[in-house]
Image: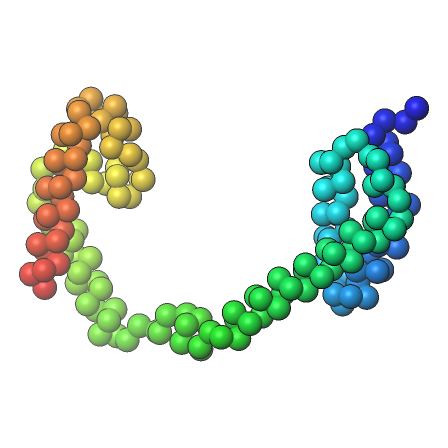
Length: 166
């Protein structure tokens, strides 16, 4: 007796083309139709054992529902994209003055970080540049998490005062 896996594989091979054609007529995209058929069979696979899943009427209904759901989702995406204004697509290009101010700000922050004690600077870089948590930093540097928090507060205050001075 064939296993459930063999049954679903045979069902997929026998019904795939018909379901893809049916869905493609509705959605107008062969790639989407192929994806939707695979989704249908993945749901069937998850619902093992097969009972009425081999029924062509059941599969046809699944295909119809998948196509309708896909079209609804596309309509929602399209209405969202149509509602966007052109200036919402991307940031405005930076002016030369903006670029200069950003470079000066970075130079100031670099100077503020260079003026910090080495351990404080190291904690700041591990957290903000390398994405390490306070617990990870504490373990590596063999200090308490509270001390890591104090070093971070000191570094953040230095950066904020540097930026506020500009």
